Image (cartoon, rainbow over all chains, first blue to last red):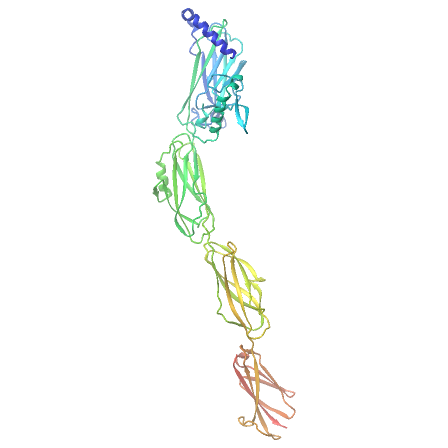
Length: 178
Length: 406
């Protein structure tokens, strides 16, 4: 059981106990995040580099199989107080293959991945394969990554922003997608 | 980590599935697919109160990437030469991520081997490449879809063993374009056959001598260019010895003949000094280098010939018709008829008769239209001059020598 799961379970208990009062008592500005609290943007690195090289793509607004996309997940603390335990979870949609070691953030974070649909996370998911009759533990291929999770260390002051990001390739093969 | 390892059984299945995927060629993410990336952020406040998760999303639409793959289904055909109604088939696969159509072009590396006679898409024939492309322009091929293209061709005569490569190139019609090609390496099957003539019946008659030449004719009856070893022999006896073959010293050489080509080759030989009537056979064997079991011999019969001269001398009285019988008297003129007969099997040249008169006789004159004469120091020299000095086989000639008795 990871620390985050413990915390989220505690949060659910609190929410269960005080749900009614919370729903009514919390100021709208504090309890209901602004719609812009999380802004996700995508850029096509492959198309951009082609443009820089002078070979502007006519269809740069769309992605082709094999293109490398960069995603930025910008979370702004729109509450009036400091928040903690900020955690981004990004399931990788079908059609994207995570680029190894591309996940990052502009603040200290713990980055983990899931290869089982978000049930469990690890900084370096491993699998066991059989090679020459022996079971060998190996790093899971990035094609098997299903989720990315960023857990921000420390509190985030009101109005502050933390941006997580990763890069992924538009899969060349339908089976590359998860 | 530990929880992952505890799920080893499940993960093994995952790994096996991934390995299967790695080895399987599958289509790309289809054009028009919208990839929506949704992320969620959870957080708590300073008192660990959980707040409603916030989500965001961004959608990316997958555009078109062309991809064409061509496979030759008949990569190394070996049709007969000549032959007709041969086919090559190619499978053109749309390896892009959206519907596309293709244009076909072709290249034939070596001309003159095959003639393309038509095309087909599936079972529908098209007479020309332009007609094929016109049809293909209206043939939408879905992602991962295929089009089977048949190329009909004839093989020309005499092309056995000649390789030519037919390349079919498919270009996608959409932008950005993609291209691919595949090749069929066509090598018409080669047949081997050779004929060497003549086959005897020449009855060559040769004097002992050097550097005789006999010409054989060799024909490549195969359907492709071939090399031939020309091997001259004279196995019958020690009469004939080989000097050169086709100008190359020794009893063999190697030549190249195009399909169906005919060429003559001279064999130079010597005839040993042996008895007239000796026989031998001059062989020339043409043996295929491409298929050594294919060979053919030509041969010429040869008989050694020689002239054989005999001389008869008859004595007549001065009237030239009365044979001398009994005695002759001093002062009497006599006529000797000298007859040269060639009883050999070939003509004699430079026939010369030398007649040293005995001291009892005095030379008077000599007559004979076929001869020229000179007399000196008691010796008559007669040279045969008729027929350019050649006394043919079985021919004879005579002259008359008139002398007086001392």
